[in-house]
Length: 424
Image (cartoon, rainbow, N blue to C red; front, side, top):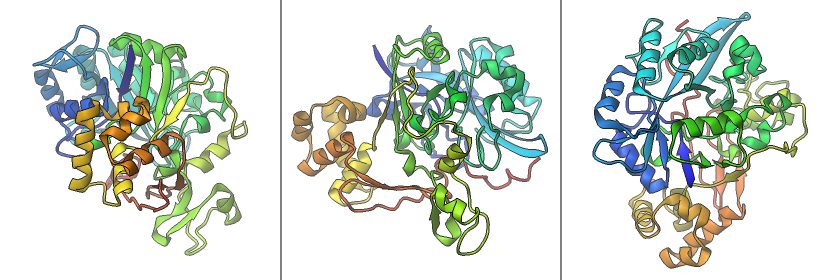
């Protein structure tokens, strides 16, 4: 069966996260989106871990459901760790995702991590341990656990980050690299950008929302042909099983907050070529620019743009339905007009992903206004324009030619939050 999975989200216990990010609201929105398996996020937080144990029950397949039901969406136990440590004469700042098959394994991970830092401070704990140590801790808890570098290219907190990362998986994880089977491409990169690095050929590229609010669920996701089973999902990822991993759902990487280089304070956006011309400095104030994902890919890649590996898992780029409705009706995304139309369409069609991916055009026309249906088809046919994001400012997607500015510094956990930079 076709399964859509979003395995990296956060709970209300993380910084800059909606108070509505509890399991019941997450389940409600996952159903609206058409997500079959959703990560719990933040199982390392003691209070949230207790809530998960009280509100979820085992579905006997390494997944969990709400206690009063035993049907999708199912939950997978997941967490994200923020590492800040010194190695090789450089300060490293990396985020890693952990997948766990049981509460027992998650408890062992929590017990080990609690000896290395304060897990109660936030849903995304900040620890001064090397990235490879979390792999050892996870594997000791259960060989069925999985560690995946999160949003692997963002400048501040990632394995390949321009300001804090390494140049390869092996350089980062050392002898534990054999346990790293996948990376999360993040909102500012997509598979095509990662295919340019031959060093990632053995790595499976996955995509998740990193959602901090319910409506952001599924903005990126993974589509499998599989059973609702933890071990099967992990096997598919580990083996890069192209027959079972059908495609990833991607936002347009240009819309990510760190796609291009730039300096937000001076309203300067630079392509990699422009950054080289200006020798890495802002042409307005002369300070160093924040080097974005595209420049970092150019720096590390050994293939030209457009290269596609033989075993590449396809990707489909989408724009969230609420954003399509907003631009089609010329109103704000968070307005009641958009929410009413969104809810009405979901009630008639069943889920957002069915509308965006599978629903025939004629049926879409029957459930919404002509301009909304036209917007959906334009996105399917990639008939849009994008102004790239840079230095913490989202890029701007234009479907009908009218640009919509989106600035959201808090949504993806890739900016140095207050206090993080000077902790260690």
